[in-house]
Image (cartoon, rainbow, N blue to C red):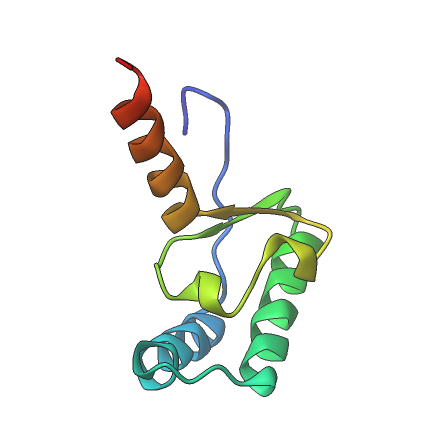
Length: 94
């Protein structure tokens, strides 16, 4: 990231706790709650206010709750990125 001049903005400790609680107490159990989605979007808005130009969904379960259509900031869903890269790799020699 440093080589590409990309700085990292992370949520506050309180927001990280909210994120982790939602992941482990809801999403990992298959629970999708509108209230939790609103909490995530609030955290994303705070990051955007701090200057974030994109948000990395770095847990496979977060994409169950948040999509690129939920916000105007660029969303990078690592599950989708990995799946597309795997598909491209599998198809490159065909």
